[in-house]
Each structure stands twice: as C-alpha cells, then as structure tokens.
Image 1 (cartoon, helix red, strand yellow):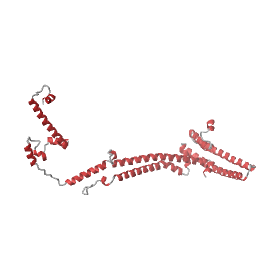
Image 2 (cartoon, each protein chain N blue to C red):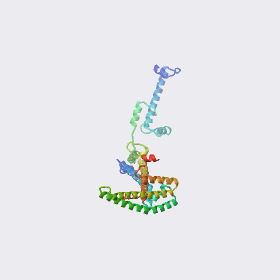
Image 3 (cartoon, rainbow over the protein chains, first blue to last red):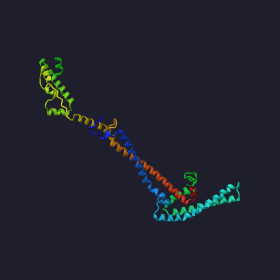
Image 4 (spheres, chains in turn blue, purple):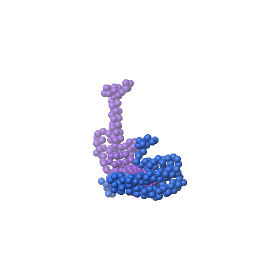
Length: 174
Length: 175
C-alpha cells in the first residue's frame, strides 16, 4: 500500500503485535525489577542479623528494647551461661543414652533402670532450674514491662513447651 | 390559487389573482435560491461558503457560464453549455500529494487506535507507559507483601535461635 517514494512512519514499520509484545515484556520487567528491589532492600537488615554470629542477641535487643548497657550485661550473662548449657547438653545425652540402652536390654524394670530413669529426670530438673535461673537473671536486666514480656515468652517456649497457650490448665491458672 | 392565497397570506393582505401570481413567483425564486444555497453548502464547508460570499473569486467551471447569475432562456443556456469547456489542470506533484495523504491517514489510524479502540490512553506509547507503571506498582505491592512475610519468618527464626541458645533440649533437638 505504501509508496516507496514516501517516507514511512515508525508506526507503519512496527506492527501492533510487536508493540503489544514490547509492552508485555516491559510491564513484566518493571514488575520483576520492582519486586526484587523491594524484596532485597526490605529484607536486607534481618538477613544480615540472621547471618551474624550473635544474631539472637540482636533479636533480643530489638524485641525487648534493650539499651546498650542492658545488652552488654545480658551478653555477659549469656556468655557465662553458654558453658553451663553445654554441660547440660552433655549430661542429657549421657543420661538419655544410658536409659535408652537399659530400656533396650531389659525386659522388666530393674533397679539399674530405675536409677537411670531417676538420673534422666534429675538432669531434666537441673536443666530446668539452670534455665529458669538464667531467664530470671536476664529479665532482671530489662525494663519491667519488657521483662514481663520476656518471662511470658520464655515460659511458653521453654518451661511449658508441651502446652499450648490456650489450654484449660492455662485458663484455670490465670 | 385562491385557496393557496387564503392559507399563506394574512387576512389583511391583498388576495387578488395578480397579487397571488406575484407571490407564487417570489416563492419559486426563493425556493430556487434555497436549493442552490443547499447545494453549495453541501459541496463546500461553511468556511469556504463564507469566504465565497465575502471574498468572491473569479467564476470557474460551470459557474463561468453564468447560469445562476444571469437570466437567460433555453437557447442561451444551450449555447452557453456548448461553449463550456473543461480544462483539467493537474498539478505536477498531484500523485505525490495523494500518496502523502494516504500515508498520513494510515499512520494516524495506526497511531491513534488499536482496532476500534479510540481511547486516548490506548495510544501505543501511552499504553506502554501505563502498562510499565502498572507493572511497577504490582511488583512493588507484591514485593512489600513478600518482604514483610520474609521478615516475619526471619524474626521467628531468630527467636528460635535464641531459645536454642539457652535451652539444651531445644539445642539437642535441632542436631
């Protein structure tokens, strides 16, 4: 239809199909770039905290609004508690291994098995005492309201791990 | 004739046959003038008509015979029509102008609409801009939602990491 002597416009040379393809690709590219950019920059802070060796203490600082002085004291408590926790781990492993072996070997409750059960219970009891002492020490460094929140969270995560937060027991105790 | 005068003229006006004949002639002349006016109006735009009325050009083509400007009988009219010559003058760039007009019209049609859509915002560059901006907004919205969920997951994992660091049972459970 077009005459070779007449200069053709860009709209003649580029068909509507190519324009639609270009629009589709452009819109998709803009969406992907925006999505990746927002996702990358929006999660960068927490990703870096999660990668850091003491990320859990940074979480504690932000979650319970700790000042630098409070964080320093809690870091010291945490460092002091770490070897205790490792010792507890070792004792739990030993007691549970012994109990596991005796349960497999015996066909009735022997005095040795009873002692192993008591030992495992004793280790668990010690473990709970040590943990609770540490939790109380940490909460004492916080502001009262934050300390209360910390105790509530630790109670649900550590002291009563098998109980959900909405049980009849909880309702009765409260 | 009398009935015609009765219907058209006011009661106080003269309704004699002579007056009625005069009135009929006037109406015929007015009708012819109206038909000519409508023909010219249809053939040209109002603008060119105004120009023709206020800036009369030299009579060309059929108007050169003076059929509508002079009073003449049939013989005179035949004589004039016989003398009327058509001398078409095609400008040298006529063909080029025609192709240019066709090209402009085609490009306008493609530029202004997709198919039968004539909305201004559907013109191709604007549509592309709108689609890219829309894509950006959608991506931003999804990015905000996704980053919020990822932050929530990371926050929970940090909480779990802290609990693991102080709870030996939780610590052993993860290994």
